[in-house]
Amino acid sequence: MLRGCLLVCAFVALTRAGGHSASLTVLHLSRTGSHLVKRDVSCSGHWTVYGSRCLLFVPRAMTWAKAEKNCLALGGNLASVHNWKEYQDIQSLIISQTQRPQKAWIGGSDAQQENIWLWSDGSQFLYTNWCRGEPNNRGVQNCLQINHTAMKCWDNLQCRYHLPSVCAKPR
Image (cartoon, rainbow, N blue to C red; front, side, top):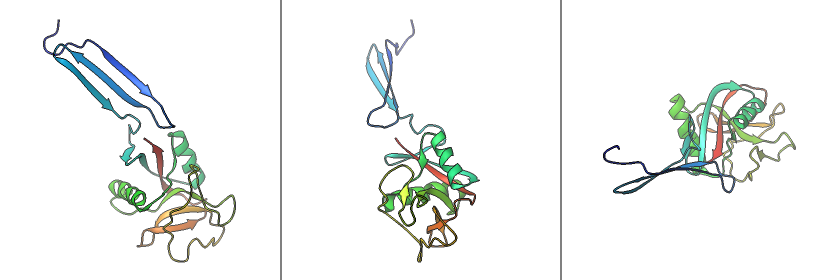
């Protein structure tokens, strides 16, 4: 038998409650006592934990619709923003990946009805950080880009433009 810690029982439980992603719990028992290790695997890979969400910066430029489809394939949506802290989290992620405030798609769109802005994840569109004079819908601009101008504010842009994007999913 092995000296020291003898693994008597290893228990792995994947849970999914309330629409949250699974987390991994591993229980190790030994002769001297028990040891519990809980590791969150919902933000695995290149996803980064920020508060109650996992964020992912996608540097490959694509249209807004293709960016949303890409986020869906990865288990999330283009990021929604509900307060200043969440916007700062997205800014921190982008700067950590690009060393500058890169323009990028997030999940806001008014494509369904002009001037009715919705988040692609279905959450309420209450917080905004529009640049002065935006959204202006100049040239059928229905999608939301961030980091417009030195003010790092929001701008509505034609959805056909190719930009990097930020995906989000719950932890």
